[in-house]
Image 1 (tube, rainbow, N blue to C red):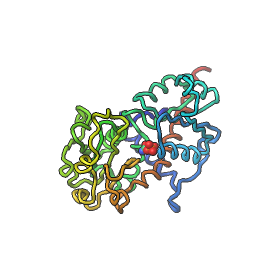
Image 2: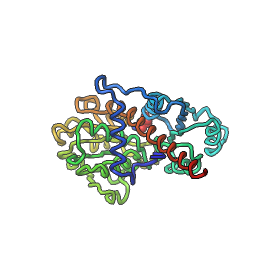
Image 3: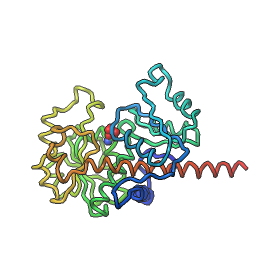
Image 4: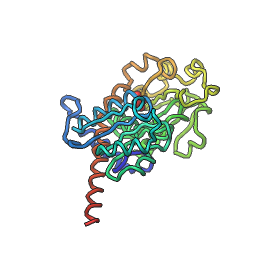
Length: 317
Ligand code: CP
């Protein structure tokens, strides 16, 4: 691994290595994430151009558990507000000898652009780009599923809600398909489904009662109102009636089905509070697993950068 921009196109072996590496960071006796010296002497910069609670905090904790120095650039008070371009901001941070940029941006493809333009000594990790990808979220979801269900092969997984605007759903679909889940179902109104999404090897349902039948995992998604034109906003009460996960609807899934949500959750819009806080909810486990998965991705990307740098230096001699 060199940069980590998307789960699309990555091999099953690599995704499994990320999950195994993440597991190795958990002290089984205490169920705590260990502190290790893998990134000692390295500098990680968190650059979040969009709001975040979970991703920013767990990337910061993960970098600290890897013993890196961490800088969180506050974009709203940075010189971006004075008109500095993204490229100039990145060059400025590179001049401080940064080794890794963790980036969240509202433009799909921003991290791919950054990875192409930064110094070859800097690793770029995608912390969410527009509607495109949120690969570390997908991998912490995979870790959560594997820790609760074991193998992916027998699982029927339903992803429910605003698929159209969800970078999480795209990254989850690629990861679940690659890791061999038996069936990936998407449940949403037609207006919140991307066109031709079936081409990704998923089954599409517009009726939630049909789609939830005998599922092992139910992944709920937030209505991404900030990415919708106001005229196209669905009515929250109508959305909840048809696509909200209530205790009653959850009875359609398997009796041991688990409930997940990447957060932030909107109670009473896509999920009933008693389900979000109930015994089958893994929502807070997902947050915890984010630390170990992000440690895995950062340490693997840094190893990839170092190996590539050594190769370049050998070739230059
Ligand atoms: N799941 C997720 O990306 O949450 P935040 O926006 O709080 O980081």
